[in-house]
Image (tube, rainbow, N blue to C red):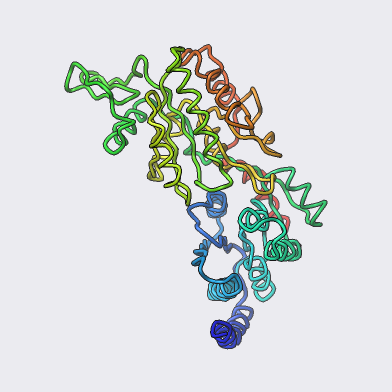
Length: 438
């Protein structure tokens, strides 16, 4: 009861003040080149919205980027939603009125309704960028038929129709929005930022030496004859010439980026690694592996304990938290990427694979409904459904490692020759004209 009184008191104080601010803003008018980009969550985990903000700024728009913490899980949904609504409303109204409000969904509760309301007061046009469905993400925790999930679906479907423009990440999501939600959207595929690219060998060596100071997987197992020569697990730099070369017999570098959540089943990768290790123990000719799993999340400690229990002899598993500038360098240095992302709706695509492809890194990805819009099986990577298939794919791709004639290198060449657009050029072609027309 006390919480409801607090909420009622807050609303009674805030709304008259907000209406006064809105009237003053309306009298003054809005800037034709101001855009507010809203993420009701961690902006650091929303690269697509960051890229929107950068692209807008490069085209001469004044950009305000609003990011909000989700709030403690101990709060009840109702209290949390009201608090977030009032907070977001206050932040939007205290800023210069914008021509456009770009909003990421999910999370869209309560942000869609709040941004639409502010748009009505200030004359801003609401642009929703559909990354997924919020209700389907909630369904992973509560189940698809929970009343909170059903309420969230009703809200998302109703309020999603209030926008002036809708963007989405796949053609299948565009079709689903049209058929089941009555929302017309434009597909804007995720593309890598320009800094996701293949890493030159000298920068690879510098990265490996840096990581080796903290993580043993990157440190050389033997010292070079010349003490002035630098050696990592993968590379060596000549003391005299400074030339960097790859070590003969080096391990293969496998990278997987994960959020360590239930919708990314890390046990699939762990079981596949066990099968691969057993092949080496049985005397088959495969390289050893360094498997780097980046990211942080609620299940990281759980799986770290499982990794320690395996006591691999030919596989080293490393779970670092990388500095932002090191992540693209690592992808550009790796031999193979593994993606465990499974969409809650089946309609979004993993950004981590987009980044890997930007670095011309072939990928093995767990299959789901619309993955084919990104990963072309047997062309730029492979698709698997379980640990058995992933283990077989690792065997096939690494059977001739590092032979240039192997399948792994062919996938890399296909990526190099695909000449895919970077994010900024893709945005210029597909999003900017839409803003000019609305």
